[in-house]
Image (spheres, rainbow, N blue to C red):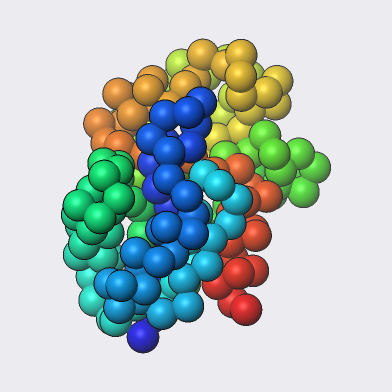
Length: 179
């Protein structure tokens, strides 16, 4: 069995795409996943599953969630090695230490091209963006709510889907996965 972290896209936000974490954990158990745990109500899961491609786990979770819970959303699954690497490759260590709630990691379906990342960075005002693999790190020094660098803008420029978590949540999930 392999420990994995799964992030759901756009659940329990503003009354849209609601799902109880207890229902998700129960669904994972029915699928044969072991020790499913959740963090917060925004679709953060840690569990053990049989070894295999993460894309296959994503697809299985998306299908089971749609049929079993009536929720159509995307999953972004990462293994422990990749999660550890994304922690180590954070290009914004000062922001992670000083203002972790304004540092986001955008988990992407596909790795973006350097040109796409440059296009995102050029759109940013005070924000800065850098990519590593299937992840985009974005700093929001003036806050996220008023920024023009929204998820829809990021996805359009990178030509892929994503879901974001702040650095605090990224660290909490890492700790859960190691426990």
